[in-house]
Image (cartoon, rainbow, N blue to C red; front, side):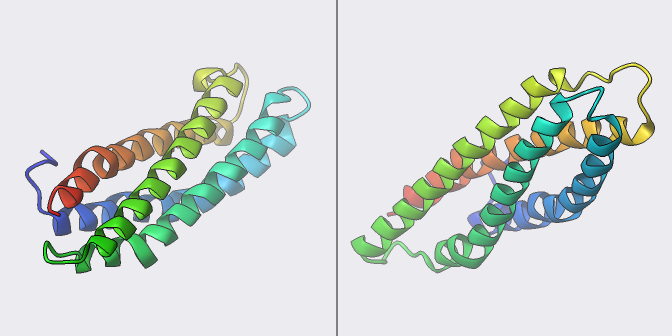
Length: 162
């Protein structure tokens, strides 16, 4: 499905599906996580550590979105087969940085899932607690698809052009 799309269509999908999802979801999830950690932190101390990991994850995702939209995607859009070898090397370095960022994000996603018992809902918790666990599941799923599109479809497609 993704492999047949043009570079421009892939970029648009990433921005309007994945980046917009993160921009909408992360602030809401952050507020909910704060409430849940405050209310349940003494009974579920894993929430307190999970909150710290989530803050780091949200910061990394926000930085990644900004970096891609401000630097990487404009560079890709300007990329042309006739571009210089320096331009290709610069683009390769940018994609390597994004892939490094992807690995950090994945480590935080794995840590959150482990800390929060695979997002299993504990007995006797409120709907906000359940919403946090579902929100984390949704962020993880969306992020994995987003990273798949970039790492295994978009980046190879642009780098093979040169």
